[in-house]
Image (cartoon, rainbow over all chains, first blue to last red; front, side, top):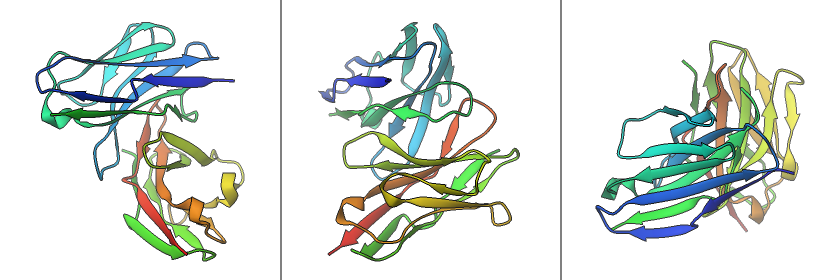
Length: 112
Length: 112
């Protein structure tokens, strides 16, 4: 069966520090991969998605970037965090177009 | 462009009462529709999905949803609420790309 992992689970970082969040999927090949942000009291905002290694689509211009160095690994990064980057970051995968997306447990990021 | 509207950011019911969470969508193509549930500090879990087969879709935990094309609705119901149903619920629509469009969520409270 397929599983999706995210780490770390929680992170407290100072403003201006770098960020690296990792997401890995097991039990499937060539998944579509997604990064979402969920701010307090708001819905899910799609940040990036990827249909293959090295293929990244950005949905919202911002302080963040994403990379997919391996088929089942998706990384969310920032060179300098802002206060507004605080939130709950969720990674998801799907098999093909229009298929169900399956979510990881999330990373809670607090920027102080 | 596809969109989802969830009426009511908060819904409160008594234990044993009917749960009704509303979702309306707009889509230029036959939609795929999803309901997800999110418990505190966790990722999203799929409750059910509609993919143009039967209009009444049964999901996990006793939930079901009915696709009504004439009303562009996909409301989520459960005949009898349990305390464990307290969570946030998200409706989502899939367009003909790799993306899901999420509603802003409805927080369900269940009182004893």
